[in-house]
Amino acid sequence: MNRLSTLSVGVALGATLALMSMLCALAFALWPDATLDFFGAFTHGLDLGAVKSTAPMSAGRSLYGVVGLGIVGLVAGVVYASIYNVVATGSR
Picture 1 (tube, rainbow, N blue to C red):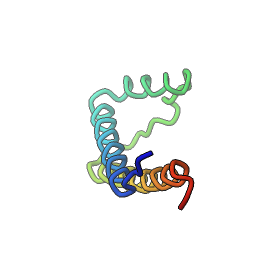
Picture 2: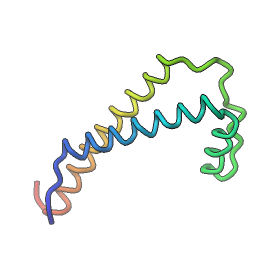
Picture 3: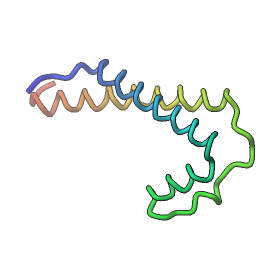
Picture 4: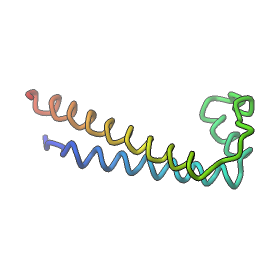
């Protein structure tokens, strides 16, 4: 089996999650109720309207979420690739 580049996987996952976060923020800015309904379907009909914030969206808060999720993705990708490499090769 081929070894994965831990940094490449981390960057790819971090960038993917940051992009998904940006698209989610855009969808929520344009269609807040429809976006909550869509994500409620992911949770098998849970009503997310009860947790909807009344505070207006700000660019700073959205950027904070995008960067934060990108960092979480980077770390998760590095951990994933590291574990994959150990399991695939049977050694450290």
